Length: 157
Picture: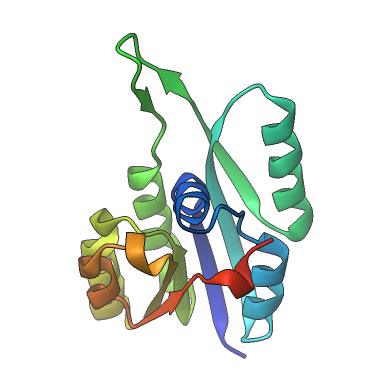
């Protein structure tokens, strides 16, 4: 049975599905879809921590599905901009977990991960798949993936 590691850039998926479809991603349906393809040996969802009930309920739901939820503080800067991305954390974990699986699946549209996918495919010999909203997924990320799967209406709540 194929061993699979899942990595989800929660903020990216939230904003890209919201901006494109005005709907939310269905994590439970996605989990069922992926688990039918092999054994999910690790599943990490990377999110920002805000002390709001909706976020806490959402993170608890992810844990209930089977995700390990990693949180980073949400930082609101004085100029109004915000910070809370997980690019380095996701990269470190993918490099670590890719050693022990057949397939790495990344949910993100962020082109910063293109070199990471090239590396795990070439150095570890694993399949590196990407799920993202087509219009908001970097072409470099799509091109570096072994396979790209569009997040469409069928994957939403």
